[in-house]
Amino acid sequence: MDPVPTSRSAVDPDDAEVGRRFAAGEEQALAWAYERWAGQVHGMAVRAFGPGPDAEDVTQQVFVAAWTGRARFRPDESPLPAWLVGICRHKIADAWARRDKQRREAEAALTEAQARPGGPVTAGVDTAATDRVLLLDELDHLGQPQRGIIELAFFEDLTHAQIAERTGLPLGTVKSHIRRTLERLRTRLEVDGAALHA
Image (tube, rainbow, N blue to C red; front, top):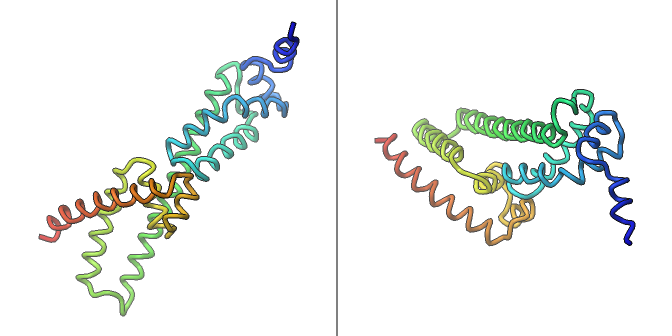
């Protein structure tokens, strides 16, 4: 008879026991938690940001935050995977808030640059500002990974190849997402822009 299943069950506790040991600060419980639930956490991050470093960073942040904040975990009130999912949601929200802040800062910098003496004429600034507002509004309606790809292309100024490398998507997929998204944005800008400038 194969003794491995018995020895595995003796070594690996059930989920509730992992939660209790995690709360008690047992490092092996962190390893078990990562083995059991990192895939679920990473899956949530990938759905939010697409595959690549952003999802990986969020996954790592979740387990670091869970471990450093384990004194707040109550295993008798909530199972450990549910607590990890809650932390993951917060980390995803934080990451989106950082992205939005960076986008607002870029918008403010552009507005300031256009307002400087010697900048574009007022009519040009008005048109550019209106188009940019429409563009930012349209980005809010994009799903992932299209939005992330467009942000990498235009806010971080990455090439198609760099975006493919960062997201883990094939180069052809990145190019087709950018092409289709730009076509959609161009149509929206032409329609809404014409209405606003009329």
